[in-house]
Length: 429
Ligand code: ADP
Image 1 (cartoon, rainbow, N blue to C red):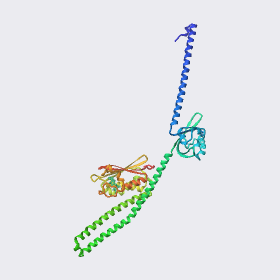
Image 2 (image 1 turned 45 degrees about the vertical axis):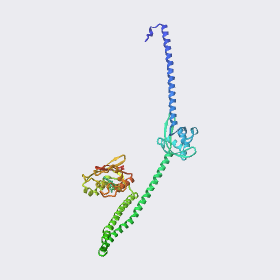
Image 3 (image 1 turned 90 degrees about the vertical axis):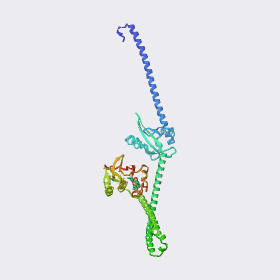
Image 4 (image 1 turned 120 degrees about the vertical axis):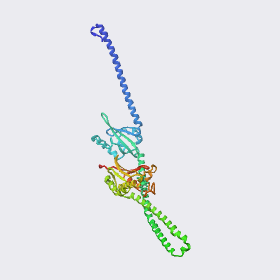
């Protein structure tokens, strides 16, 4: 650093002039920097505005901004397409132009009310509303409105989406579901009427075949005392003692089979008609009454049964009782005689559902047969045990009617677990 106190006057003036020159240069540089900064800021602003414009321009959603009086300030091309208006036709006009009566008349009041009270019906929420195109035609749309607070102004941006196609698809689906439900009901009625009406001729066949048996007996008796038997002995004996009774037996076995099938159909079709009463179910007490009724069966099978603490659920008491009775009945019926039977019932809550497991260490079900056990009259091993192959079909049906589900996981030769899911009850348990 220079010691200016030791300089001569001339030297001092020279130094000052030098300093002045340097200062001027620095000043010029500073203003160049400032100008460059300004330019940069302006170009960044222009850049971001351009970017914003590009986003608005290419957005698939219609975007409309309005001021706090409901006056349209901008509309992107997607919104132009949705409402069939050009932006310059609607700029400066009230946005209520885009909605039908009575919303059109109510909109200004709604906006005013929102500005005064902050009570929002759509702003910040979004919902399905009706829009109106330039030609007056109406269409359903999803509308979400957000508020932008600037220094001196409040703006509202509406995001709109024409959902005509979606609505159409939804309506079609609902109509199809309705038709399906009606057809189902019709089919159920046919099954009901058919199985009901077919039973009376069946009872006739049963009755008359019994009569035929006794007639046959009487005939044999009478013939045994007549000379006819001596003449045609061998042939008549075979007819009366073997061929006719055998044929009648076949008829009766067939009739019994049809009878079982018909009563199965009847039970199944009655389910669709039975009224259900959904209520809070205390599953600990429901299972205790189910297991009490099965005590004898469990003892006879020399099996152990454990029932864990179970969460409550919502369902129809009678039908849920029927489902668990059937699952426990199967668990006992399909135990493996090679090992001591172990059966357990447990439960847990998961995502608003109560899920129960009925587990056994029985013969199990091969994976390829697992989906089939829910089919009507499907039995894996018909000769091995009693049953009509209807229990699980009915369980699935009754659970479906009360928003429940049933499924199985099983290892052939090791055991099966049947799962039942029902809506959890909001009460504790
Ligand atoms: P049913 O027991 O009267 O035959 P279900 O509809 O209750 O009729 O069961 C259908 C079939 O599923 C049964 O015939 C059996 O083959 C199989 N099944 C059901 N439960 C079990 C189980 N716990 N273990 C092994 N197999 C089972």
